[in-house]
Length: 316
Image 1: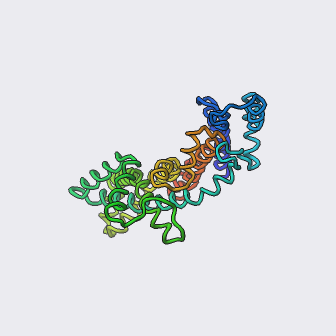
Image 2: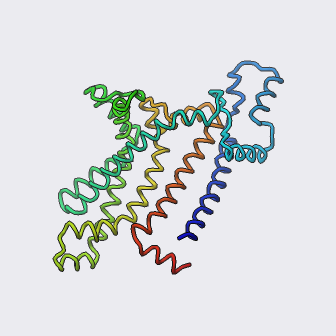
Image 3: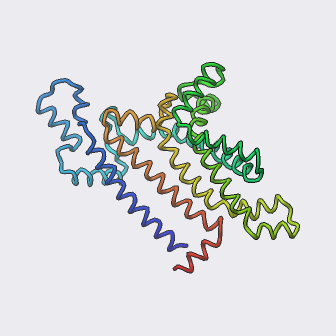
């Protein structure tokens, strides 16, 4: 297990290095110039332009800029925002609680709804299964911005049950403000998790040891809990880890639609004005979330299915 952890950490480090280079390169290959945003169409002297380019190291060779940026990231210095003229780390930290609250809320809805609907469809073949498949199919095909507009129109404008914009203040008010965004964010992912849960449980229900347990008189709830759900948790856990990490990417659309001042909205605004230090930092944060989620899933799998531990030991 220790050797496996070391290999995964090495892979994590290599992934972060490769993706950091890709993120840094893609931003600089995009059209536009951050200096153009800073002068905002006004005429500027060559000295002023030179000072701007020197402040953001725009005249340095590409590899030199990359090495300086990586060195800053390792020391907690993510650069200075072109748009806000503030440290990028401070901008992200100020908006991170809103995004994490939204991701946690949506993640809870995804787990509860996806697992419940998937298990219901697997255990109730026939009309119930078909209804769940139809509903989850519609959910997975609905883009987040369409769900956001529909929820605002129905529950905010027509019914007035939930606020449509803003972060809210205080725990109760914040929950009310985050409910519609969390639902809009969770809709597609909950449908995906429900379908994976259904398929995984159906596969386990068809296995021979389940039939043997039933023939021995084991109660149905124990069969489902000990022999079906437990063995089906492998693919469910894998998809769940990827989904939760993917929520960080999807928040950009939902936060913009609901006027939430989170990291996603910050990313959208920064891309528009080519605020490259912010775009680079947020993109690297998303990659880090994905890699850590995959690492956590790999570490959880042996506890879910001990057979994986013996298989890895045999390969070693």
